[in-house]
Length: 295
Image (cartoon, rainbow, N blue to C red; front, side, top):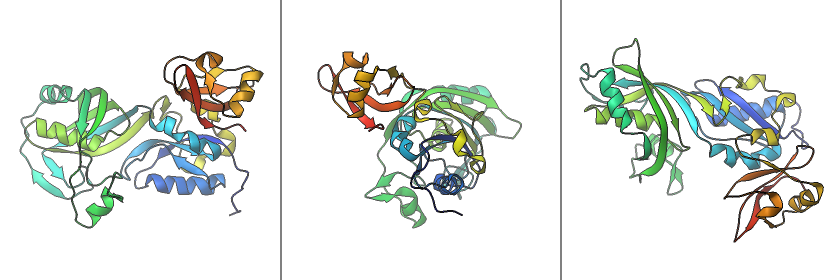
């Protein structure tokens, strides 16, 4: 393997993560495939989960937070009657419930109570940090700590029956930070028993769908999305050469200079379609750069 280039590529890649890999594993493999060190991901997928993982490469790593904030869509199987330590099929069974009488209408009614703004307690087996340590590290040591509920939003939740006994399919569109394992477990509790997630697949991050995702070993520098293309879910604004010069220097500007309104963030693009910066609201009628890519 050649030494990673210091003058590496910039852009985004949409990966279809395979089961058994951590998100960090995917990043490590992508570094070798693309021969560059500067790669990050937009949001962790559990090792058993599959699906869309957006990678930022080069300077685009500085833009990943604008991808992480996008809503996500998942398809999961919810297995009623069994609770586990990890809230999925990987964990040890902690409780069993007879839920053979639960029908599709029951699950649909219970699930409806979780649509909209809700609070979730993060699972112990997760990447959340408490006291400087990740919860999954504490869980491996047999330590369980109190976790504060966190606000999330379930934008849409559909339920379908499956051929497997006591198993239903959930299709969930939700805010960043939502745990589908916790959602399934909470629905199980609402039904008077318990549940865990069987299979879990992320099918979309914003407008990035599984249809454009590819295995990490098929990544290619020539196929990376440009930084501007990677921020396609944000409303971008093109500026003339004079304003582009000010943007390149990261100047605080009047919102009218960029033609923006609201709080942002707004990708700012030059006449050639190159992403110069991402701006956000500042004081009064001014805007400031959150990230400047062009120097």
